[in-house]
Image 1 (cartoon, rainbow, N blue to C red):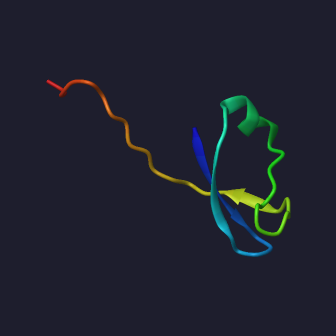
Image 2: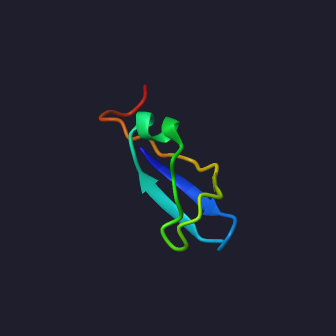
Length: 54
């Protein structure tokens, strides 16, 4: 899954692709300033299915 985060220290918004297990560990750092003071942002998602809904 792809998760979006916001760094409180440098204001960077970044996305990270990780498994659910990796996400649950919560050991994430900002790629710009290396701070651990990051918040997950709420984002929408798009689900694509192979057929049209009836």
